[in-house]
Image: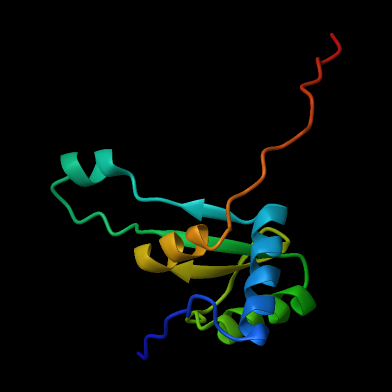
Length: 118
């Protein structure tokens, strides 16, 4: 498979694509990290790696995410369904770190904790 890399700075088109990806990630995307305890104690290969997941609510959003990934220079892999949503993964430690350095940190939730009624 061909590997591509996102260029820092890049063209106006790629900066717009990165901004779109960051907004999707902040909305409800998430980062999956390998469990270091499992790799240390397991005698079997633990193959879970670094992954950024972008969540799309419909096919239009999924296509926007996939196009933005291409424009930004990231590899586009096969999406998968999870309940009623579509997930577009971005695999690899270097891509996850690069994306987070470019500003993909999630904002903390501003919701206040509510007490349940008894």
